Length: 286
Image 1 (tube, helix red, strand yellow):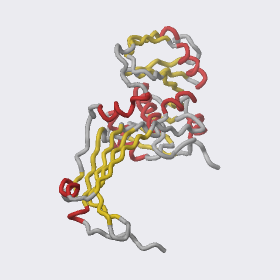
Image 2 (cartoon, rainbow, N blue to C red; image 1 turned 90 degrees about the horizontal axis):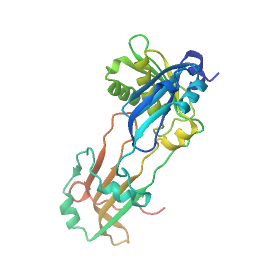
Image 3 (tube, rainbow, N blue to C red; image 1 turned 120 degrees about the horizontal axis):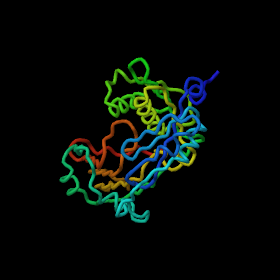
Image 4 (tube, rainbow, N blue to C red; image 1 turned 45 degrees about the vertical axis):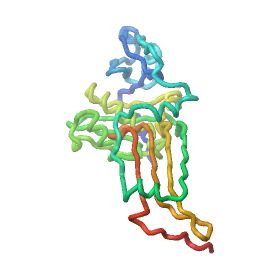
């Protein structure tokens, strides 16, 4: 019989947690824990930076407490993000937090200069979401001097490394157990849920299950952020109406989006076929 992560977590956990999320990057000013302290099953309110979680003994108790918890937030004086119609100009012009070193093969400048024809294209990829059938969730157990995370994340070893870095623990002390869940392809929000559960479990010193609500899954699902791509190529026409590529340059502006330690910022890959690769004609049609 197949056991789903949600079923397994229900059997072993006494604590449920629900995260209170805000779409705007507001600054947390205060939390009135007295607004939920006397609610059924209340365990604790945990916060770090702008992250706020309500922990209760049962799932429905955590949901009710999260709706009643009173918090104070300070909105930013200026809008932190552009309007949707100016998003991609903002992405291209923003200063990256870090950038990978360009990968250069051959002599791109000479290859472009010697190409009879240059082609350029810009691509804009909007935000994408999995919109899974159920919200992201995970269970974390801090027992036995280690952190064990039960998750349906696509990359268990990536989550292990990410949780270890996030919590400042040796990688050997973090274990990720993959289980069936409602989503699993393409870097789902299971990454975030696993990190959240691990942090909460470490703070409480007891097992914690976190499960996103439907609106959270729709708003915060992490399949892919918006990003921009620029392609530039140098080509030479061939007698048979085909072309030979002299050089290719690709640039990518994007924000990494998962718990796994990222490479953030702008990457540029330069490939030159003029010096390192022969011009191989395309295969003849069948």
